[in-house]
Amino acid sequence: MNFRKVLLLVSAAVLCLGCTACGEESADGISTTEATVQVQVSATTAYAPREIRTEKTYYHAALQGAVIVEQDGSRSFKYQKKCDVCGYLDNTRVNVSKGVGTLDTSFRCHECSNHQKVKIKTTD
Image 1 (cartoon, helix red, strand yellow):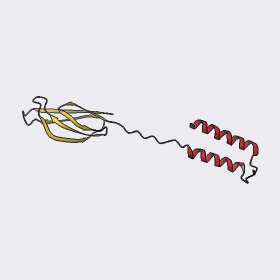
Image 2 (image 1 turned 180 degrees about the vertical axis):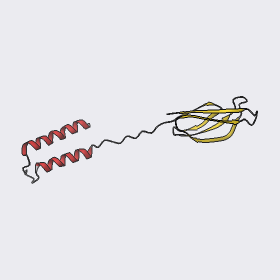
Image 3 (image 1 turned 30 degrees about the vertical axis):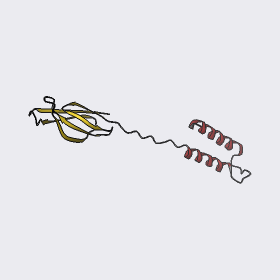
Image 4 (image 1 turned 45 degrees about the vertical axis):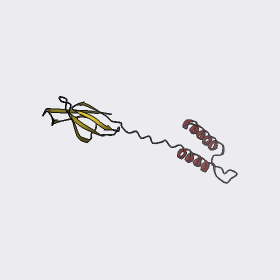
């Protein structure tokens, strides 16, 4: 049953119990006002809304001077520096934790001594 149907049924039961007896004791010895409270508490605790937790997924893209080596959708990723002139790929993997935006840095190539800019864009 969905939540609206249950709420409607509980409301109808409370209304019926409240209108017919108005606080008089029933055959079990429980007053109708106590029964009403019991029905309302059980309905709210049994069908409490679920907490939905959504985490952001981050995407990292190398625009210039780098190659993304590892990313898993979190803020953290690893990249290697790459020279655009001679194609040299540095063995070092750089570990970065970056939110949304652009990472701008640079390095000097070990092979051709080119001053290479590094740009990595992060989106969510």
